[in-house]
Image (cartoon, rainbow, N blue to C red; front, side, top):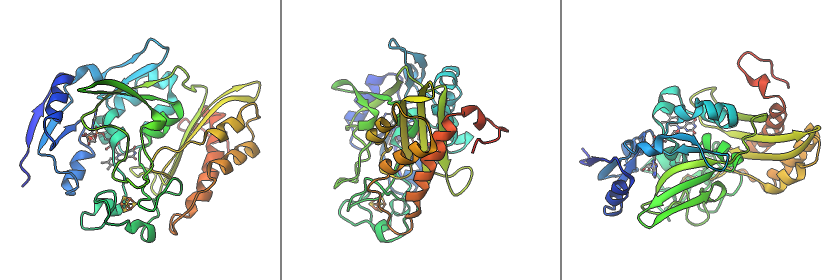
Length: 339
Ligand SMILES: Cc1cc2nc3c(=O)[nH]c(=O)nc-3n(C[C@H](O)[C@H](O)[C@H](O)COP(=O)(O)OP(=O)(O)OC[C@H]3O[C@@H](n4cnc5c(N)ncnc54)[C@H](O)[C@@H]3O)c2cc1C
Ligand code: SF4
């Protein structure tokens, strides 16, 4: 039996006060990841600070810069089905709805989605060595079961992937994360939020101790005309991505004027290669050009035996998803795919 204290808060300063004075305290939002980690004996909170009463952070509203603010405590479902998200950022709706199950999305919060932990089998087995869970103990995945593991941005210490779908769309949209701490507020560009493992695989992201995520802002460009999210996985539902791709693009006179391509399931953070996106600007949206960009994105990719297939799969997924983005309507239920 794990004894713990439960405290519900309704204002952010109270939340920060409770967490900063107690090393063994954890925020809990939807609980869909934290409770699992706890049950697997990987998290040991002595105090749960329930932040679901922070109503100001449940809102989804237009901001003063033509973008949209997504409260950290808004659920994944409320976000995906929000009229403004569906209309202006359909890439985000599609990515969220590709994840988990309806029941989990109804509980999962936007802030919690950013902080979900890897699904590496060894990380979840408390009896196994794992540098992320127990720094210095080793990484059995490198020579073990690594079908779901990373092919880019790996280190000697860890080859885990970040499993979110929502965050891959947020990376393509170039979202900004808003955080608050007892020292004040700050903003973190999405590309700087998650980390590569390097020699500190225990750190998944650049959030500091005692920081509360308050929301995520989306810029005005939502790629509502040309977008696509492709998730490739072992089962068609209720499974994490082996490879996923989020593409948003702007076209003028059959030339690409702006494009963002982010990959999931292949690295410790959402993966973008700006040089490949720049290469595509002013080019026609052809399979050949997308294939060249895919080669640039996968440059330096390295498999660990059981995940070698992800290199070719990622290249094909990029090309297919970029072509699907040319005709998003074809992805509606019942529509025939264009490829
Ligand atoms: C069976 C299953 C299948 C899943 N499949 C998918 C999938 O296919 N794709 C996908 O993307 N995800 C998937 N998920 C993950 C799910 O999306 C996450 O568990 C969920 O988004 C986490 O949100 P939460 O609010 O429940 O977080 P919690 O579990 O409440 O919290 C997670 C962590 O974040 C911290 N935290 C929460 N909110 C804040 C905040 N505002 N500020 C600071 N810290 C905070 C908590 O302290 C905790 O450490 C799946 C989960 C399950 C259980
Ligand atoms: S890949 Fe990372 S999370 Fe998995 S066993 Fe190795 S160190 Fe642990």
